[in-house]
Picture 1: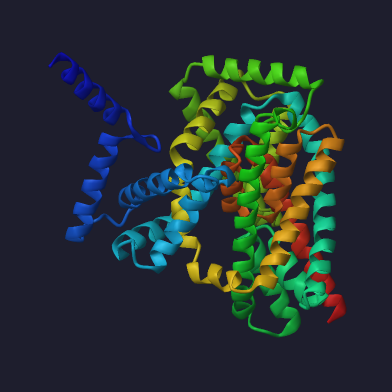
Picture 2 (picture 1 turned 45 degrees about the vertical axis):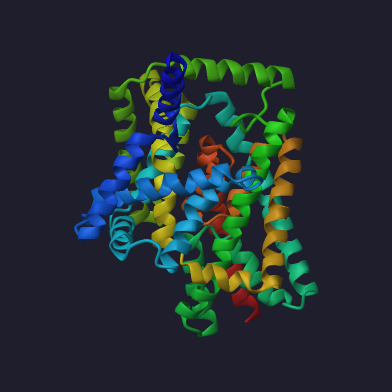
Length: 443
């Protein structure tokens, strides 16, 4: 009897300790029951609370599936399933319309994506090593430019060999992939093409949008593969650090020391809150600067906090608060946010349209793969950790800020988001400008 009692106690303990994402099974089941009870009665709140409940429930469920599938889990399965499975579920009507409406309203009307980016960028930079930051921002432009130029050449070459033609390949496949996302890339690109060609911008936008999405998906997969490579061959990984600072042994020791110091750091909610307030202030300052000179608010925010960090004017309390804020966002917010992106901003039919055209897929894969390979080798030559350098350059093929988040989450390297933002925003702006300028010259 005693043995049976111990066995039952052990089973109960295992069940109580089982987690879906970050949620213990009991909390998960409570949320599941409440959400579906509200949906059954048609009274799910169409506000932040209702949307958050849906995003948390579906997010950690989908991520758990992706995390447990063999092979898939090693190529960013958690992120792929959290982003794209909800997109399919909306298309197949597996998610109730009331839930879709709540999430879509929240994502489109609250601008929560930029709250996320502001907190994670400021939090990440504040907690970074100052000397490494200075070296990295100066050097990262070389692999970024090399990757963009080489990938463009390879993409055009492959597209031409497949019969798509250089014109079609560059302007409608390669340029959209590296244009910096949807709102910052595909949309201005479509508007520029429309003004030159006299076609409807909506028609052009519908044509290039799925290219952007699939390019981002391919980059997510490659990021997951890079993470796996870094785990298997640690000499190529900086464990989230972009720059090397000495010999490989020294790098490993520095990484261990840094991780130990951060692990021992006590969370101060006041410091974390102050860092969050600073993030909001810098972003709003970016909005103001954008109204004056047209520079995107996230870039203004990024440059401001980077300059402050480089000058050494950020107090230790805010640096510590930045680490706490960054960890909170990564652990609690990222996966639910990806579900919001999948439901509200990733139409499934647009993805299918590209998947059914193998020539487009080949060009997309070759273009993104070239960006990753060039980032790896050029980054290594410039004393960067190859895994991290390749991930940052891969973000130039991402779906804007959402793509950066998904790509780096797949690689477990969200601390690289500040560098990814530079790659995506500035690299995307340069791509859009160059593509429109070339089209104007040849039209």
